Image 1 (cartoon, helix red, strand yellow):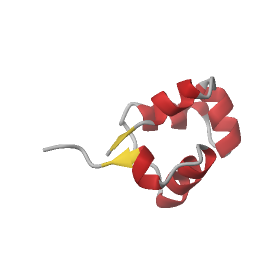
Image 2 (cartoon, one colour):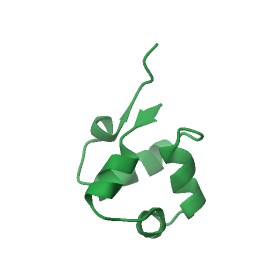
Image 3 (tube, one colour):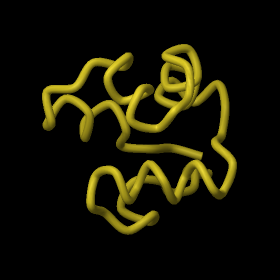
Image 4 (spheres, helix red, strand yellow):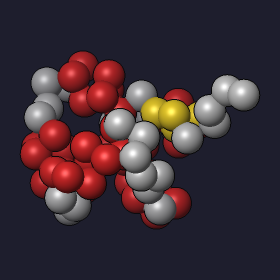
Length: 65
C-alpha cells in the first residue's frame, strides 16, 4: 500500500518522532509505514488519517500494478 504520510507530515512541520508521539507508536513504526516496509493496522490507518484531518483514502491508496 502506498501512502502520503511523509508529505502530510512535512506539510505540518512534524518530525517522525512528533507524529509517533501523537499516534502513540514508535518513531520506527512511522518510518516503516512511510517507506512502505509495513502497512498499518486498520485502526492505526484511521488514526493517522484523523490526525491529519483527512479521509483514509486521501492518505493511503493501493500500489499500482
